[in-house]
Image: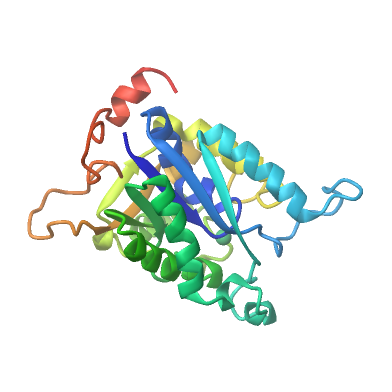
Length: 281
Ligand SMILES: [Zn+2]
């Protein structure tokens, strides 16, 4: 069995970007570890959602704990950096902000954890953080360096298949991002995707994990406001780029379907998604 570490920027990213993959790995008997860079201090909660005396960080911590329970995360570690806010905001330059942090120092923190966990696989974001959020870009930079320091054998970049998302949006006339032009720069073009995990057997858990982040993802937001079959179509495939070991590009083998096949070792290919799904998830 493999130990797979997912490195995310804020609570809720784990569910949106990789929740189905996490649940499928956990059901397959793999150890799923989540590392978050920040507590998401700069998110905005709907008026009246927080209890008296409750901070947004308190609430987001509870939401994340619930999402981890739903997704089968065995261990969560917060690195304790501060949310940097959206691109271009003043808060990006706050010395405590993750985006302004020294990459080398942060990478050592993560590398120590990778070594302690004996991680086989590390998952970070693509080089522009999927949608250019400064904390997501920093996850990429810190994660890449940490995987070098720790000698982690398998490295994946979580991303979105832009071609697929654009096609889905135009076919359904459905809003799939904050604004339509955002889709043109989101994720990466389809040809760069090496790995696509079919998480439809785990889609109810992915949805529940996203809904657990109620301070950030309202039931009527474009993330969740769709019937189950549409949700499954939109969110049912999670896309990755395998960086290490480098995939053989000259062989037209199509996209691989699991993050642990490349990890090798005992149990890496033990259970296909179908086998695990048949056992009930
Ligand atoms: Zn985020």
